[in-house]
Length: 168
Image (cartoon, rainbow, N blue to C red; front, side, top):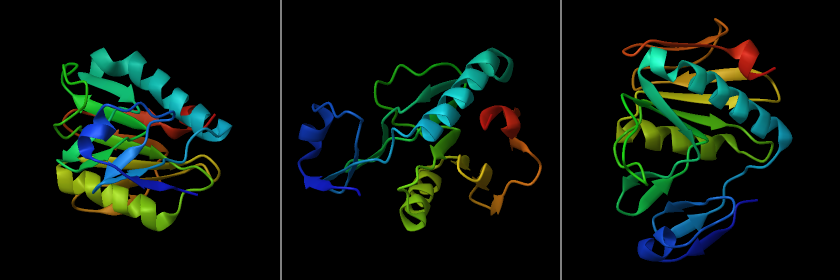
């Protein structure tokens, strides 16, 4: 169950949370993380991404704070940035892809709000991965669909990730 605490944005930015929390309109919001299935999918994805970063011309990082606005920070499970590694300690520009790996406690409406936040910020692709069902969902500003091909894909830059390796 998520617990929200009211603090200032300055206080949020100078506080370390374990695991990191999100900040939405004055409230610190806990994230659902820490289950083995969640961690395995996240690490498998990061290993695959790191092995292909140079080939695809991208930089990826897990649990990197993303500033959506002055009073709105999210912490995607994985961010993929097109181009070289940014210098930002907190990412302020929209990443190319945000990935959310579902935990058993995640609720659809909360995940949909996050997806909408990312897309409104200018993120081109949002991937939602469900370790329990081994299903993936792809969101863009044009469409939302369950992945049927077995590969997570993007264009410009072209990325192709086999789901079987991520969910193994």
